[in-house]
Length: 213
Ligand code: ADP
Ligand code: AMP
Image (cartoon, rainbow, N blue to C red; front, top):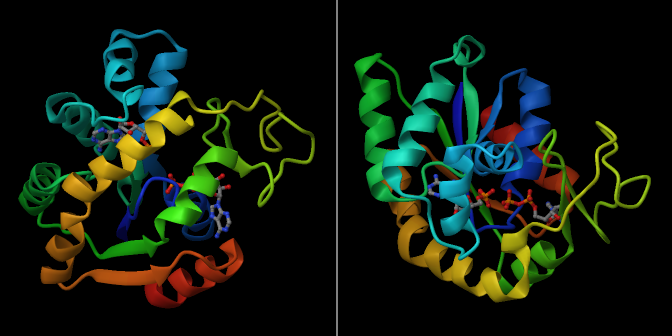
């Protein structure tokens, strides 16, 4: 099963992808997490990606497409995967489609998590992230058991640089200009499902599970 999570930054794609990965036992592949891990480890890729991420811009396709295709070629992705944050524009979607069709394969579901801008701004402001394991919390909605510490791996939680108010507006604009057209793209392919992301995370999860069957 190959699933794409669509939706604005902060809509809850990563939160749902984590839960789905556990239920269906397939990897959660987040290009944002891969970049953040590279930044943490001080790699050349991380340093380059950071210059774009800090401004709320997309990392160039040449870099992003390569790391995504390398990741999904790994053995653990053979039985399927959940993509979160990729594709982010039509050219990326086309590259993915071509790469899959060479293998006689395709995307099965594109789940669009719909949340209005007001909620998005509150969600990103309160988000706390674990760079070590990719887990996500919210200071009010999904607090960790111990403030500032990841429940899953015990590492320190951070406020992402790109979740600061000065960057959030840019990210929403980039989403509207470049990523939102993917909703029509996957609708035309007959794999799009819209989900109300304003609901409690368990309710959103149950709705998605009902779609996936
Ligand atoms: P995305 O991956 O789409 O950028 P996240 O999954 O990181 O979004 O979620 C953004 C923030 O909103 C996080 O702080 C997360 O804990 C919180 N969140 C996610 N889903 C919900 C929900 N259904 N209700 C309330 N808060 C949520
Ligand atoms: P995310 O964790 O999905 O919110 O992504 C954080 C940031 O990483 C984005 O704002 C982009 O700068 C970069 N990024 C993540 N995925 C992609 C992608 N598919 N294409 C380009 N940039 C990306």
